[in-house]
Length: 337
Image 1 (tube, rainbow, N blue to C red):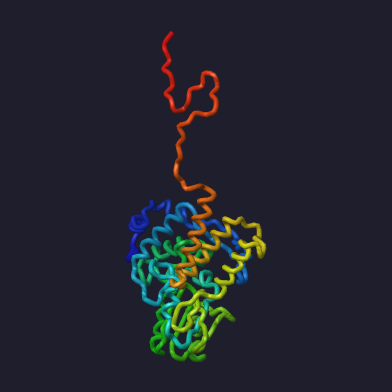
Image 2: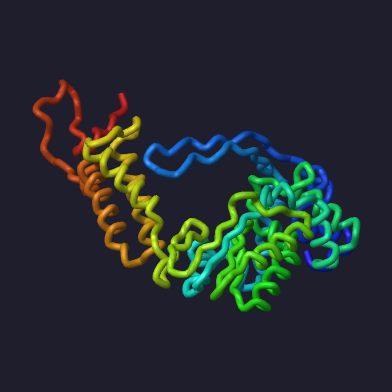
């Protein structure tokens, strides 16, 4: 996509005829997503949110652009939307920090408007103005990034890269480590001051965003630090208590000490394996728990489905109907009249 200067070149890059590309603009399924509450989780249920999901040819175009952008090397502070990045690695980069501060950018996809996307294509990828306009029309919906597109997490980074670069420079000049996980900002260092956090908020506002009120956290030395769903304590990545609470609730349901909430035993065992798998991912020392859950699933499948070995019987049934040919004998060849 770099230096795209003509519509012919645009069509060649996206592997689609130009009329089909232009006709796909604005092709989204729009709906409300109301997450079902998890009766076993101690966390508050997520709020309903509006989703804009590209469909048809537009989805193919988004996936094509995503594959191309994934080839670009990103700064170390960027820890989302690419292979080798994860919420765990984002947190792990702050192991050893005596103090940790976390902030959240409010309505990040909505606030990443078409103008920011246009500037990325025109200024960073050096596309001509009309081509940058087409690219920005293709990847935005109602003047913002669509929440249901596979491209949006990575596009949100590139459309706001100048903001993240400035935050990284601010952190480096202060002797801190900075990472971003989409809209989650994390800083760590020996001593993070309130004035530093004010500088962060000032920079975020200058780029047209806002820090979510009430979500900024400053974790002092010696205290557990919560970073992107992970706990940092004693210079290690630890499993949040909420995962263990959910596991205990599922076990209570399986053992008949609590309601199963209309889930079957098989569904609960699958849920248990999923929680244990996540625990093992966050803390590899707990891998034996996940293996034990997998053994439980195998035992359940063995009881339900058998061992999968085909047992062929050559014994005839107790009786055959007159004229019936046993299945292990060839059918008689018909003779002509």
